[in-house]
Length: 501
Image 1: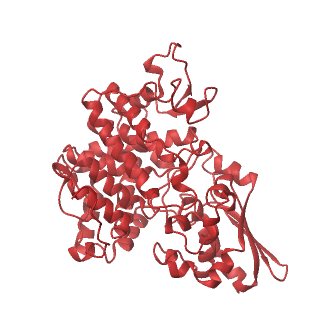
Image 2: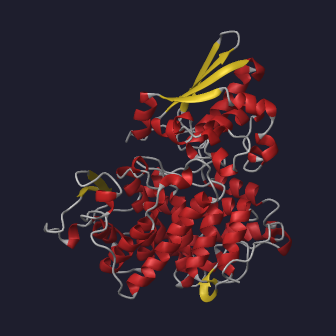
Image 3: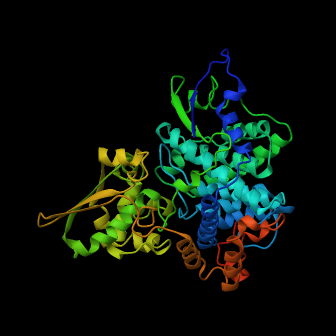
């Protein structure tokens, strides 16, 4: 990996295009380096993971509405949309599938200077691969790039401290991945990356206060913008340049300002793209920083016994966890029993309370309105708070994978005055956790979430095809989806008429 110093440059300053971050990223995308076997193995795992969480979300309102928008745009050759058996314009297929994948907050994650869900790259890259008649090998190469670029940007450029949403890293990574998939030249990818970044920078209000369904739509929008950016770049249209480093660019006005420098690591020429190997998926349908606390709560149940004994619970954790999903956010909505699912998903106080009481976490039952409004849950929920612990913050940002942690120390004070203390650094499903996910766990997750949604024979077909994704010849990537019966689709709320049919 080579570190690239990125800073603002005045318009009058000599700053060759070849030194722009967007150009450096485009060079990585244009490098035809082979994908190493362990990266391909993990890409297949994440194709399974995305399909699993999309199946579980298929009949939820936001997903149904996104699907209705997509199927208003039939197109040949086109791309597939989860659940239905036809082909649609690739940018709309990326949109619908992106919402389905993101709706339950249940797929993969990478946390460093910024937050991210790198699996959000898959819908747009796959849609273009299907539409363009590319092979499984092309798809694997494109996804290796998408993951690599997102991970590298997330390692080095913090967006949330400037209240910019994390999908600002997704637009460029998806555009780069599509560029690799299609074998585009560096200049074309460069223009697409610049356009994708310019159109996908937005504030973090989508993940603050009363969180709406736009939390799921925002990454899908970034993927759709990436597809459209590549289309325009292929037609010879350019982008704002330099997009990150310009005098009126992203760094100068949206991030750290004209004096800020960032060091962005990128693979050198011929260096394999291994970024996906540093990412991790979720066992529980909740914000990633609550994964270890859920497992910690389940473990604490036996030690506490009667939960009515609890006077207070303080979760000592990282700055990120405290201010994003903890009491450091100062969001009263995080204690509101009538809050949206998206808001509850970002309340570690609610999540810890329910995990303590139930000993399990379920992607639907744990968020049910009647579950959130239970008087004993509300009482326990309001006894829980978070506080930043500098050591957890340090471990959160550690570059040593054996030390990096996203957990917490729970201090449970009982009415008797006794204090019960326990901590967990990483979730059980984390690569360093008690039960790390491998292929068998990804398949089991798919089977569990597909139950009652995808018929058994269709589950078998999808799993057989996806596990040889890299071997699929050109034109057969349309098999990397699933269909469901009309009866299943009928469970979704009817989508009101919009602008499209």
